[in-house]
Image (cartoon, rainbow, N blue to C red; front, side):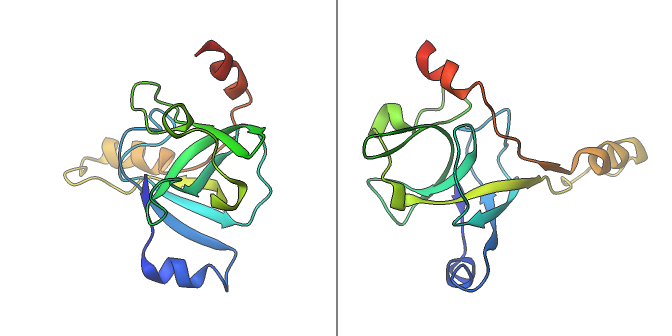
Length: 144
């Protein structure tokens, strides 16, 4: 689940892009705790996209999930980590107005103690990556 600062919340009205920090394991292996996301607010959402949304029961909490399919009343969203929970299997369909934006890029900051040249080279190679839509998301839905 990402945390957005108040500055990011206010800036959203002016800029279509913002940064969110991922906390928790619900999107592993796609996203890990501490990853930063570049989010486009108001973007068109399609099945398979990684989205930032307001939690249906606690609107001050923002979460990152994968939009699986549009249903009556909104979007069915799932985490990539089936064992973490906290998705539509727990709270049902998320209203369309709670889906804030789409994640386009994932950035992993350099970890403390990553000082060897090989570790830094590995980090530099994989630090920033696009967040691709997973078109197999609907198959995971049917498998549950």
